Each structure stands twice: as structure tokens, then as C-alpha cells.
Length: 151
Image (cartoon, rainbow, N blue to C red; front, side):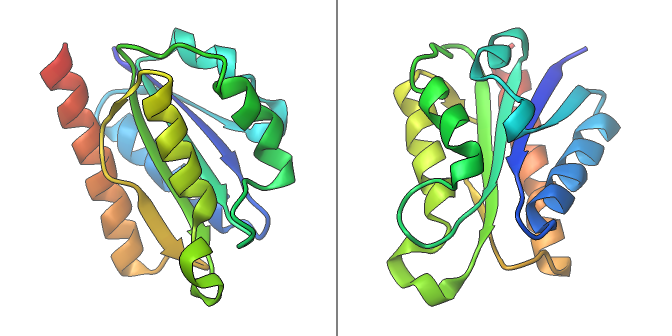
């Protein structure tokens, strides 16, 4: 049975809700899934999972939020070659080019540590609507396809 770890940071509850949607869809596909708040997570835990997923809100200052910053910095020291990754998160288009900046930063970092992108990132304006939920379902489907293509 494939396994997935979802690490998330949520300020308003929106990103946590998305993490639950992703987890439920992975479980429906037969994955063993753990969902962990970033404050309680260690990046080294990703080495024990087949699929590594991060969800983070963004504040618009072109950095990751403080409550997931330590995790982000730890992730930079990991080697995740052979792991499939995905990133999703929420943000506010008010911030222009910095919209969902944490999502973009995690995406680049996963590539830098050798992981294979399972799906394009999902960036959500504030909170998930029906279209966003469909995009999260497609996100999971793409990750599953990539996992099975590589195993």
C-alpha cells in the first residue's frame, strides 16, 4: 500500500480543509495517509513515505509563513530522490506577483532536493470553492498516476 504524508500550515482553516480533501481522495485510492500540522512535523519524516505533500497559506511577502518556516528550512537539507511530491495552498490575489508565494517556494525546493513533481501546484484564492475542490481531486489523481508510473 502506498503511503503519503501531508504537512500543512493553516491560518484561517482553509489550507487545513484542503489537506483533508487531499487526504480523503488519496485514501479513496488506497493510500495510507498521515496529515500533520507543520508545527509538529519534521521534514525527515518524508523519507518514510512514497508521496510528500505540503499545503501552506501565503501572506504575500514572498516568504513562507513563520509557522512552517522551520519545516521549510529542514526540507532544504533532505534528499528526496525517488519521492513524488505535490504542493497546494491558499493566498490572496491582492498580493499580485506574491500570490501563493509559499506554494511556489515549496515547489522549487522539492525539485532542488530531488523529488519528482506528481502534479502542478494548486493555488486557491482565500478558500476552496467547488472548482478548487475539483482541482484538488485532479491534483490527487495526477500524483497517483505519477506514483504508479514510477513504481
